[in-house]
Length: 602
Image 1 (cartoon, rainbow, N blue to C red):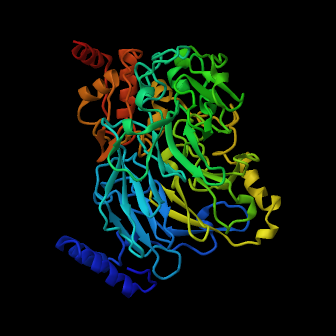
Image 2: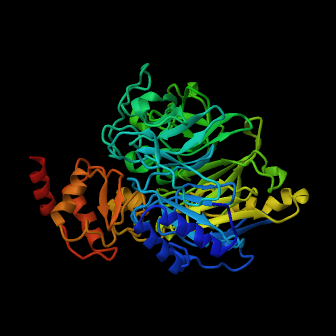
Image 3: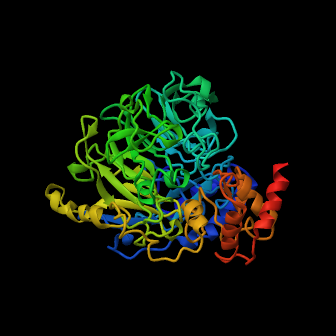
């Protein structure tokens, strides 16, 4: 099938594809025609001209909305040499059971008028990868790396789905499986650890870490087969972890990873740990917890040890410090000075979810060979504004940053300040470069995709064009360093539940809506309403995923709170939760908590 700008020809080509497979796809193809060839035709809304869709960009850049929303939402994206876009769906269920989405613009207006889901495979909401390499489309679930051969002009590949890398269950947090490729036939796979800080009891206040940072093998079980990057043969099928090479270790959660062809090196921006204040309130203030730890930008040479779970990076002090689970107190360094320092540290909890080294020629020379990073945005900065939700640019020279990071695109959240994660209209997730050098950005919340282009005078581009974005870096509440007193969003609010504001708000948010992906909502939740005994038991003894909440699967750990909260405290917070967030009002008494505690401790 050859590329075409003719809608009539496109209809014929897609019908031919469906006809060559089965009767059920013929019916599906007909339905697509009736719907205007869009899985989401009602949602492909044209945007006003010259508004940049509410985004803030350096002078001379413009943003075009390629697709307004996708039912399956979006993680990483890839753009083919003919302009076709491939999206890793965030939610298979909402996407009709399909894990991928293909988009094509047939009339040259820059907007997708063909949107087709494809590729059925098991997956939840963490699977991330979508990359094109050497004529193949690579994509991932939480446990698998797949690929399909792309054919010239064919939008939806009809080739068989090869399994390249296989991980073993169970599902756990931080299973994202991002991929990158070198120039020697290797594929690199990020293998996130299912733990926040390597504790005996994950995310439980006061629980110590497992292992000894001073011993030769250190001993944390997560480092045996997680918390790092593995290298495999990009063209070999059915590889298990033992068939690969552990390329790097000590990296808690990896989503952003790319190979820089200029320096011929692998790079990643890793997620720092969470919950200093929640887990260690005697050591960290709310402000210190919001400010630490830094997100780390690494050049990944083989053998790199990022230090997790024993150490974290304090980007203000520019030091690796010992985590409190292993005896740290914000001062102790242990052997942190022996570890590789990151190239650069970013503010805490910004959540780096994609990395792209710019290879194109459309943008001014300032951006040549530099790195774009998509920061998905924080969930646990309360009581301060949630932060991130931006695209940044890092200039590069000789394989290292040659200047401070810059704000390239902001305004995705659509609100200021961002009080709760659910207030953010969009959250930038994936990055891809188009054949003309345009930068494509995907969003997780609605599946919107933007195409950012440069329309100004490249020769005249300089400090003046960057001035407004530099000002945003210093003043926008989602980017700047918050003032400890003035920017505390809770300072003028009456605290209705001390327990909730201390232990619950970081995950479930002030509005009880969670973050839509990692942390489930409490608002109108079946886990809050209808079964009081089950609810009390969850708070007392914790819960491990995956669990279904309001039709969506969640895989994070709900830690047991019974060991450090009294019956009265649990009764107080559950009465608060049941009396708010549009739940069914009901009082929970300390006696009821005591009864469940005794019943479940037998």
